[in-house]
Length: 519
Image (tube, rainbow, N blue to C red):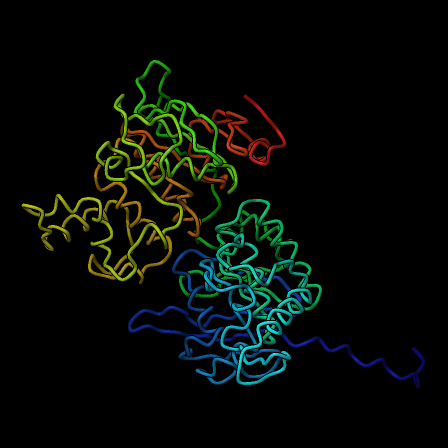
């Protein structure tokens, strides 16, 4: 450069979509966040990971204005966060798409998009009355602007899960938010739905939208995100580019433990049951029209059978038929050779079938009830004489389950809604085990829980089998299926492959997606 040549001005980096520094949040004596930080750049997909109880949910509440931090600062685009309590101002900065959909199921897409903002006359520009034609056209324009192909006249409950998520994202962007928090967005999606969601997120990133991605599925972090922040025990552990962090190092950061070999699920010296052993659970010609074709299963004492299948495979329907939640079109379920009354949950329970449902929020828990009440729902007939329920006996029973499953709680009387996701799931498992089932049927048992809780829950399933019962795990999560002695792959209601314990990720995923068959 010549002495008199003007210097090129330094390039200024765009301010962060969100920057949080020194955030502290206490709930009574509990420190939920201890001086943590987080920075997400415009157009970035940034993962926030950590075990249950690490502080992720509390941080989301602070970022969305639901909780005021006791210390620290939050800024959006270089400007201080709005005043806490100013909901409209916060919506213009940030929005959250939760694992549990927040759309109103009986309203149309258009009505959900402009909920509490219907002020349109017939011209679609404003007035005292709602101009439905204008509302629908405005919805079409909004959805088209973000490339979301959804009919605004369809009721939200009739949309696939990922399209409901697209609607929530579009609604958030319509308020001006350029940062979207995705809290376990893939928990209820099959592989194709996940891919469609990720494609849409990448498209929106190219328009400058930033995403904070919260997930327990580390493979998705590596597939979607460019940066990751780890919290552990309410503290910030690290922030790093995803490409520079191995999966082993990421798990170590989350758990505080050094990387180790894969968990040894099978007890030392355990012997797989032979074909001559009488099955605990058997199906013969079991079928449900529109869901799965006639199916013969035999699950023996000491065995964990895996059924691998995506959302449209019929696997979930199979699990619901086994436990009596749905009535089969044909065929039968038998326990120890005795036919189980079809479509009857009480009869399935009496026959010795325990059930871990797919969605703990909808089917697994009564949120406003205590840990003790939830854990003992299936054994109320055993908690007092002549059909009464004695609180003391309920608490005693619950304490034994809390100790057995290592449920982190303040006691049996704590509302189950106050537990972390992993501990809530353990309560669901406690309820399933309360009657000492001979066969345990688990649908996606580790959905929405952290790595450590996942190992613990799968270890419980393995222990049930090793103690002489049978277990069936129905899931599309590969980690869930590693605990199994054998795995059947379902595709469009038909068994397309059967694997022993030595399957590879590639061949099992190929079978679930219908691109590889092995009998």
